[in-house]
Image 1 (tube, rainbow, N blue to C red):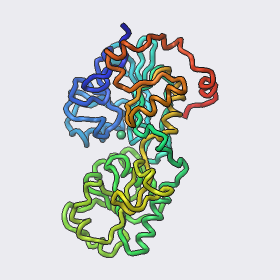
Image 2: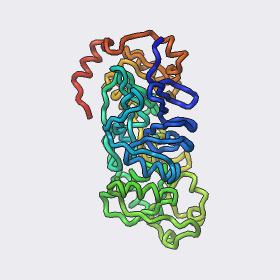
Image 3: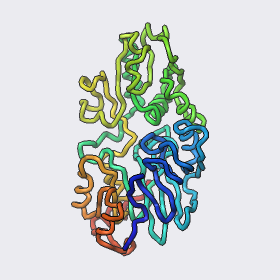
Image 4: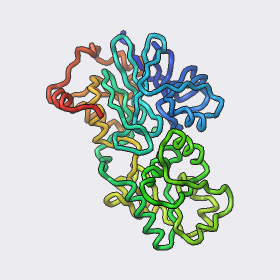
Length: 364
Ligand SMILES: [Zn+2]
């Protein structure tokens, strides 16, 4: 019976031939980590492998004493008979797709990825493979966003408009990735120091140490309200949970925004008004949208695709209509995988229109 190189287990993706897990859901012996977000890098494993730039982020998140090995992008390391390398995912600093090669087969597990340029991290690298295990966070046609948006300009104009009206501004977003992307986008403007929530300080320092150029920052005091907020015109970056904190409650002169791909469809154009409890929304995502998920899956040339599903399998069904063999990631559990049609991946060929599409694309 054909065994998958990566199988779906209770602890997540497991490579039996190499004896390691990818982004395990529970403590394991060997954890290969795509990136430092908490739904991918979890505490308690004996040893971690990640990209060199992820190491400081992982230590902030999981503890300074974890056993972790940093691997340069594209360098091949071996786990048993499996060759493993990390390739940029363009998602956050240090984020990687994991490439596995074994017995002539190449598998790639994407982690989270995006194709849009992001000044805070390494650009996405397209990796050709036989089997692609892809994220699918925004896997419905409802999530297609404008790729040419000037995010820095939009953020700066909103801040300036609020300032001129005597308001402070607070943008809510994730502490790792989104915050530093906003700071990198605002770097091009002559901005006064931006207040960041304390939960963002150590992570932001990792970005600067890695050489990323960010707008100047000050860390919000843990208690008390800085007097400067009384006059308005300040910008604060904070996680959504900070809404109940003293500095925010003590002042009613804040305009609020949320930066996320989830803002799409809740706004007109790229700005959101009303609902969801924010004055403004910025469609600023660190994931591929519907268009880029489809584009990436096609460009890898994979003959089999497994999706970390959301959206009730919309993308799986769509890929099937294109003649691509697609399954939810749960089909990698050995019992289900053994029921899939057996095939020699190397002999598989694309339906003609797709092959033509692929041959006309370069890598990016
Ligand atoms: Zn992530």
